[in-house]
Amino acid sequence: MNKQFPQRQELTASVPVKLLTAGTAACIADFITFPLDTAKVRLQIQGEQPAPSAALKPTASGISSLKLNPSINLVQHVQYRGLVGTITTITRQEGFRTLYNGLSAGLQRQMCFSSIRLGLYDSVKTFYASIIKENEAGLQIFTRICAGLTTGGLAVMLAHPTDVVKVRFQAATRSSTGRRYTSTLQAYRTIGREEGARGLWKGALPNIGRNAIINVAEIVCYDVVKDCLLQYTAIPNDVRLHFSAAVIAGFAATVVASPVDVVKTRYMNSPKGQYRGVVECAIKMGRKEGFLAFYKGFVPSFARLVSWNVIMWITYEQFKLVMFKPAEPAERR
Image (spheres, helix red, strand yellow):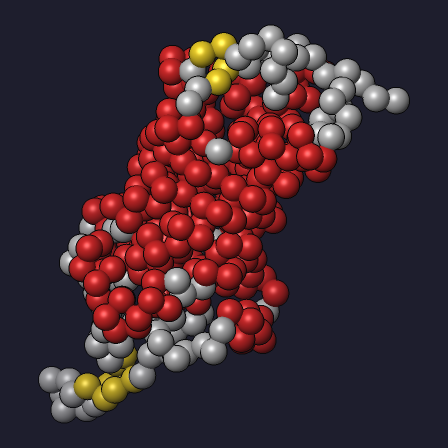
């Protein structure tokens, strides 16, 4: 039996206003949760480094002792342990500011990526609704999924180079040898010069897949859960509703996106020639480290995505109250 979902007060705005409010809300969320994202990246790339070599070091007694060569990184799977441990280790060894390495690229990414995937979502959903013509009394799940996949894929195609630079900055440690960038602009130039345009779009395929999926899990899940909570619970349409829907959307996004996210991070951070493609990267990682490797960094991913969604959605909903105008009564979400 189909249930009639109640119409709620809709707000609308011009496309530029939608893009600006969505991008700004995402930037605020990204700034607050960025240390969690850095911790996630460090945990995800653990295990891809070779074991350190050992060297004999002379002691005062003249007897050589076995010590690790300090010029080579320690095996990463013992370097970081858990979300709090990873953040603590990074802060102690490299300083608090390291947790915000790549923030500039991250904010550039959000302003480009989230403004499109979120700012255009309602417009694209309306377009698909006019074509698919699902039951207007229902949740129109298929229409929403199509809109989420479209805006997510389009957004990441445009914003992908910012994601590559962000991952490179977050993965680099003080003891890293080779690639180190002094600024995001220098990073774009260096990657373009040394690796070509393909370097800036490295890992684009898994990233498009990942963000199309995560867009559905975040935006569509939030959209549907919000409607269901309004229909079946007594939660009013305020911050409490936005918080509840955002937590559920963040959890769903973490579960479905983690495997693709780990492969994407590994491949983006890999030196040129290490992997022939993302499929080989995934196969090697699975063989070497097992299935659970695809869920490395799950706790910080969950903490980051849930907190990011909560901050972003609450901020965006408040922006909409200020900057959007009531839609015509005949208009339906």
